[in-house]
Image: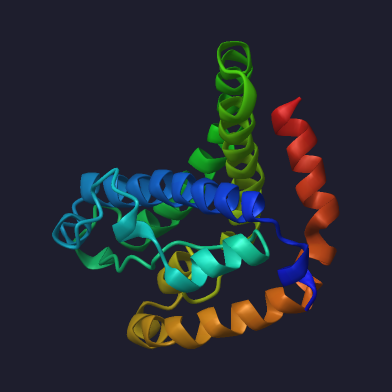
Length: 205
């Protein structure tokens, strides 16, 4: 696993910052929409906030820094109290990921404006964070689109199998550890790199 040697301090810092941006936007979107649909749990869990800390998954953070694909701290939603029931979970899933895809191109004007405003080390640092947030955002969507425990895609599992919601949630920690192992092999990135590059060109050009 020579990726540890390949990472510079600058890459670690920019990926860390980029991850915080992505999970904060995604976590707040998911929590906000679920609350709008009638679920009070996100507010009680402290997830209706722009503070990134409640949204951070420590294994997800490690994944973002080392491999780029990542996830946020899982948020337990209750379809039984949400308008639309199980369909509400599908809506939260779709909107949560769509917002991240929308943010990627929206960062381009900010990047252009800051490039004319900042100079030297400040410019390199800030533009590096924006670039990392864009790349990590695309990888975040590609991974979390999968209907697997611990990912945003687990909402699809919960919608399809409501009787198994508790089992799906109990599988979150083991799933995160498995994700780290799989990402460490490089298989996921290698398999989806063409799609990631294609989305990048589509959204950022």
